[in-house]
Every structure is written in C-alpha cells, then in structure tokens.
Image 1 (cartoon, rainbow, N blue to C red):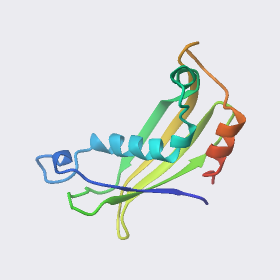
Image 2 (tube, one colour):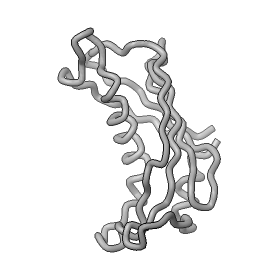
Image 3 (cartoon, rainbow, N blue to C red):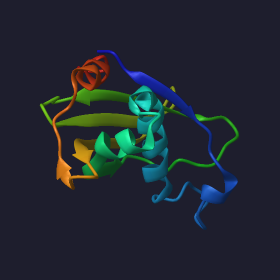
Amino acid sequence: MPRYTYLCPLRWADMDANGHMNNAVYNTYLEDTRFRMFSDLVPDDPAERLACNFVVREQTLRYVRPLVYREQPVRIEAWVEDLKGASFTIRCTIQDDDDVYVESRTLIAGFDSIAHRVRRFQEKEREAIAAFAA
C-alpha cells in the first residue's frame, strides 16, 4: 500500500505539564501531514482555491501511548481509504520504529466555498488522491 511519510518535528511548547506531547497538538501534526501530502492540489489562483478546496468532515484519534518530547522528529505515515466521488478517508499513524502513539481516521470532502456546498473531485484530484489509496 503506497503511504506518504512525513517526519514531523516536535516543539518544546507542545509538551504539557505531564511531560508528554499535549493531545491537542496531534490535530496540528495531522493537518501538517495532509497539507504536505496534497500540496500539489492547492490552486495558485485564490478564486480557484475557494472553488476547489477540501474540508475535514470528521476525525477520530485513538491515543495508544504518550509521546514524550525529543529532538528527533516523529514519523507520520498516511494513506487513503474509501475514495468516493466527493470524499475520502485518510488513515494516519504517528509513530517511530518501536512505538505507535496515535492512530487516526479523517474523512475529507471536496468543498466549494463560493457555492457553499460539497463538490465532486476533478480527475486530477482523484488521480493524486488515488496515488495513496490502499
């Protein structure tokens, strides 16, 4: 299965009072991963960007074990499941060689911010998304 891998740097400021990464920052790590994974799909033209963007419809995270701050980045692996005409699911694991810290499932939909509605994917979008499909 083709996966996208992002080596995500950890920030000292993301650590909570218990000495591990705050649960809230995992959403930011996943957002960074999605953006990098599909950055080629972001149109240069601002008007086109409004008409051809994506929204998170649903996201679940399963916290497996605490991630303690360190200078080495954590590895995030992402892949696509359930690609449909206007939505798809991204599965991610936040991990290193020995441990999985978080597993996530994010439902993404194509969205037209001008018309304020869900939209179907264009062929080039479907191809880019399908490149990471399980």
